[in-house]
Length: 554
Image (tube, rainbow, N blue to C red; front, side, top):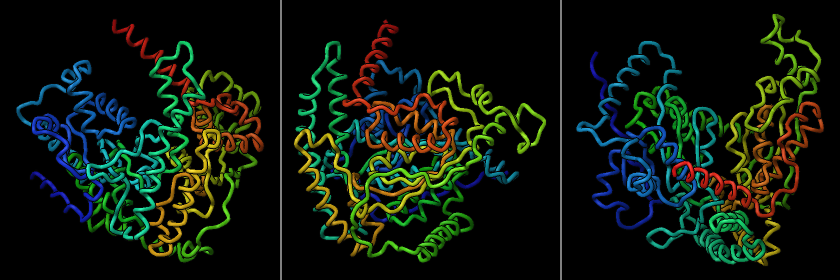
């Protein structure tokens, strides 16, 4: 069989580098020599990882979400150049021949399988890690919207300050040519300036209110108080704020993600589709070849655009010209549930142990539910699959920051309306006690005025970039009870952000009202008021784990 030709990478689209910090190259020649073996490029914001063991990639992405460093800099500083990391033993010394030869051989094998059997599921046997840097929060949400086969991890607004400037002195937010509006950049700058100006006063005020306690390490106290300050101020960040994220996925999922991004209404996402396709073609080419081809990928993307435009025209309340409304309080509303859910859960639980058809399964609900769930000792002991037979539809209004946190849950169907300012915004209650609420309110209201003008002149989709995360958005969840257990037990822990914690508590209250017996076994949902200094206990537990590790090493 002849060797398949290696696909040539797509042409770099105009404007792709517009969000890359301006200045000298990030790495010296010596550093580049060390790094080039592990990344598909060293000078573009989208790149894939290669020649790294899974344990290194997992640790690398974990660290990546809590630092403002680039992924390549993290690998260099904290793995390659860190003597205690054991990187040389894990990754080994580079061989004489780059092991991309082995990758090409594997690609040839998978290509033969794909041609011979035509089964798309074969593409789930190959995966890749990709880093996407200097992309907007809006585009990050589009990337993370793929629920199956893609695992994302994004830079945290709780642990990382977002007021770092580029080499040219500008704040890091999206500046695409489609946002050529005289008010956009001044408004975004004003939001960042307010955020930057308030971080230190907020941190100092919180430390005065929550002084270091006996036995608490300096590290834990400073981390908890800084996280509290950044939590209070994250609502000032516009949706165009640049972030970094890591993606791990299989070839089938990446193929669909690229096609879907190519059809997106945001130009930035269309550029990302081309960038992802180019980089993934260097590491798993057989599995993303169709993503943008003329036979499958591009027609699929064009159809997505066509369907979106047709359905939008049929909407009884189109977005254009809506402007600002009177606001809407945060809310969680149970739109739909199945009154027969308990019987269906019991029947599904009994089914694998019976010779009866599913609809004929019957048993004592109390006894069956007790057997299924009564002995769960912690939230990591997952609820069984039978709970997926109870489904609920919720409509939620909350700030975009809370949506950003809750959006990543997978065992549910969700969609949102465009981010705007008509539903009002949240003023974090903790700011008033610090005397910073007036500055916060002035900044977000000024941004709302600019949003109205940008929406009028450029349209509702690009206008989203200037909307601060404090503003409300409306979205829906359609979730089964198993995911309700997982989401609510995870997102109501006392260390969680108060905004998403409240949403999770309300979701659970809604389920408890209609199905009290089914909800009763979710014992690890915390409906209490939460900790005032949310991260304090968690940081103490981190210290305990670090001490235990140190003792083990000694």
